[in-house]
Amino acid sequence: MSVSVSSLWFMVLFSFVLSYGEASHQIYRNLESIPSSSSQDQPYRTGYHFQPPKNWMNGPMIYKGLYHLFYQYNPYGAVWGNIVWAHSTSKDLINWVPHPIAIFPSQPSDINGCWSGSATLIPMGKDIVPHILYTGINKANQQVQNLALPKNLSDPYLIEWVKVPQNPLMAPTSANQINASSFRDPTTAWRVRGEWRVIIGNKKNRRGKAILYRSKDFTTWAEAKHPLHSSPKTGMWECPDFYPVSTSSQVGLDTSFVGKGTKHILKVSLDDKKHDYYYIGNYIPKNDTFIPDGETIESVPGLRYDYGKYYASKTFYDSVKHARILWGWVNESSSTADDIKKGWSGIQAIPRTVWLDKSGKQVIQWPIQEVEELRGENPSITMGPDLESGSRIEITRITSAQADVEAVFGISDFKMAEAFDPSWTDPQLLCSQKGTTVKGGLGPFGLLVLASDKLEEYTAVFFRVFKSQEKYVVLLCSDQSRSSLNGDNDKTTYGAFVDVDPIDHSVVESFGGLGKAVITARVYPTLAIGDKAHLYAFNYGSETVTINRLYAWSMKNAKLH
Ligand SMILES: *[C@@H]1O[C@H](CO)[C@@H](O)[C@H](O)[C@H]1NC(C)=O
Ligand SMILES: *[C@@H]1O[C@H](CO)[C@@H](O)[C@H](O)[C@H]1NC(C)=O
Ligand SMILES: *[C@@H]1O[C@H](CO)[C@@H](O)[C@H](O)[C@H]1NC(C)=O
Ligand SMILES: *[C@@H]1O[C@H](CO)[C@@H](O)[C@H](O)[C@H]1NC(C)=O
Image (cartoon, rainbow, N blue to C red; front, top):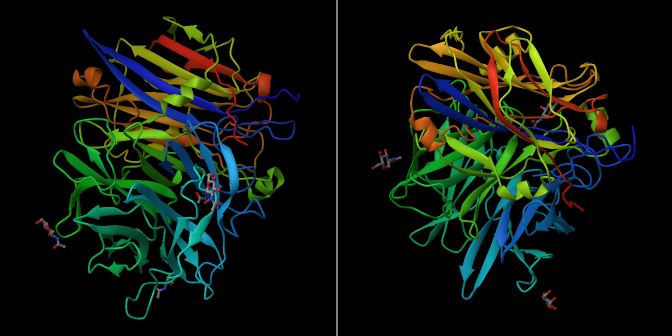
């Protein structure tokens, strides 16, 4: 491996046009399959995903035009433990400047760890004061909630933080019967009629809960009679997130915004499943109730931000861009032993703008536009070739190990689409059963990324299209099973159904499919690294598909340290 080995980060922006008779319909989606490198010994280090120099991460806000990212960090090792709040700032969410640790154990109420929390920006006089609520692990190893404030508001980097003497502000007691091992991750607070509200993740037996607290001064908090929401048999709810979305526009809303034409998203990270699930519903401020619309987190497959590896995510309202921005943590898929050898684990996915789909049935996500600034000049452009059954073409002229690809595939004949069996409720299972090797009518077709010379290694990102009565079901798969010759990695195949109806012309104009299904994966090739990594478009289905348009850019490195 040469010193010039570049990062193996890969982003696939998949679009594809389904042409049906006269109509043409576009289904757009984004998916990130990751990996990377930056030095001789670090083939997997990412080139432009935010990553701490070492160890774990997670947390975000914009203050005086500067983005702040706080993340869960272990200063002493590559595995979870000794948790503090590390801190970096950025002008563009891509290039980062590191700062000293912002919050570390120093009080009886957090002496055993400073776990996740959130920032709330509070106007006070002519200032806006960020308030950070976080979970502290106290002397008795109980989870309690603490508050920290910036020491010097004139410092735009907010380097130093002071904890209020009243900490902890919320704690398990014999009166409230809260389980001291299941009480964590306060959200950004929102205000109704002058009173603040915050929710905290909890469980009682197997019932997951978002416990609600209220406060007039942000210091004295009282638990509400009812949780904001709860659900039986879902286990611990970690890192809840609760925010309004517009039903008619992609513009983001301040967390406290309440009004007509909005819905609320309640996201919870299910500790048992290690996935982020969300509800869409109505928030009723009058009695602090959240009423989910149809789909719930118990339904199968359930609504998820990402059908691959993505956890402990949090959004914040970007008051400059007027957008809601989503950050998520992407766990490694390597063994703990390999993580220790690498010296780090966990990265942040590229921040995504998130908004409600016009259907109101799911959210749409798209990487923030700033990512495009990292695209090299002269993309490799492929327009028009047919991919016949069983064929594969190489996409050249780019650094395939660190690239960004947008592809639009066209299908002109749907007759070959196989019938969809209604008993197929688990897209991940379907993807792993069929893989790339089982020939279908329409598909598998898509991309082989991070592929080695002789295809000993590759990650396949592909589609299969099925016919289901009057609809087509599109299955999106990310198959890591051949991604690495190293047998120690988790190579689970991921899958998602993409909710589209090619017969519905509105798909085109609404761009409704854009960012409808997202899959993030971690892969660790041993051969397909640096300039040995290849990129192919393939079609192993029976019916010909067309590459209407494929743009591939080499990606530059972001400044991270
Ligand atoms: C607060 O920060 C400003 C800007 O960095 C600095 O000039 C000032 O000296 C700081 N004040 C204190 C008390 O540290
Ligand atoms: C409290 O939560 C912990 C951690 O999940 C669990 O092991 C314990 O059984 C719970 N205790 C009670 C009384 O439910
Ligand atoms: C809150 O108010 C809504 C609308 O009036 C009602 O449907 C709901 O049942 C109430 N929830 C509680 C817990 O009282
Ligand atoms: C992280 O990934 C490892 C390996 O795939 C898995 O065993 C573990 O459960 C994951 N942890 C989380 C929090 O997702």
